[in-house]
Image (cartoon, rainbow, N blue to C red):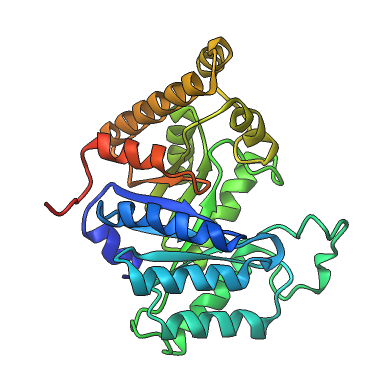
Length: 301
């Protein structure tokens, strides 16, 4: 389903993000979890694309299996790094033939094994180049939907790590939207004020497409320490830090994380958020529980 139809069906949307498992044994576990999620009928699920396109095949396999074996609407990520124009065109042609409705267009990172990777030879240097190319592909009329792919791009409520100038950062985002992006999905944040400020600055910059809020509950001490290291967020609010530091176990931390994210959701919904996107890291029981508690799932009785 094209993303515009998903938004037309009602807001806020609720979506979940997964990554392709590396081990065969993990596929079955992931699909058991997704079967539970399927019955709750989220708006869509997204599937990540490893650094440098390392999970290209697994991303495709997961998307195809979701289309075939579930009612979930998958949105695959697609990144620029290390790809030729022909490779990107082939990927789009394949997804178009399989009825995939949308693409998340990202700049991407080089693989960790490629230290000092030189991007000067890459056909697509930035996400906006990928957005332009997808729109050009859409114009060729090869997609089953005459509108072609819907396109998502990333937003950074706490600021893009590569663009300290926040005014310039929003200008780059506006350019991606002007190039044809249909919606913005934000990186993680734990303070809703950061999101509201980002949303207001987007409006000032002339960005009017839907903006989805990216959330992820903290589930362990290791996850709490690792999330900023992965550049998934840059800061925790002091009140959340106090709660985590006072916790006696990972079980306590998981409860704190769930309650914090649940309260974020309630506040965002009360303030007319366009959608909430849960980063699951494939540990989705907690996010599914949050989704159930919100009372907004379309479970078929």
